[in-house]
Length: 74
Picture (tube, rainbow, N blue to C red):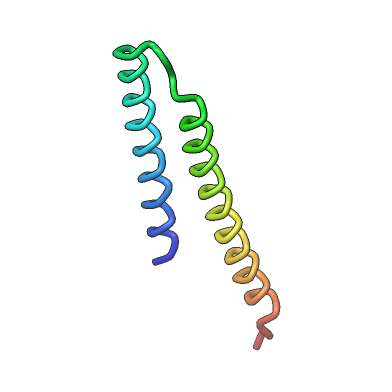
């Protein structure tokens, strides 16, 4: 169940990054100036979110592997 949720989060972040990029390109076309600090903040935020999700997933996988390896055989 958790794996599906994290895949949805990753897909949502990729989708939002695409929409954000299109919006920034449109604004740049209309105004002629790019919001550099907003771009840096947005992609910094999404990168940290994906990195944190990756760390959580990696920890859960390692815990699962440890539990399997420590289970006594009959």
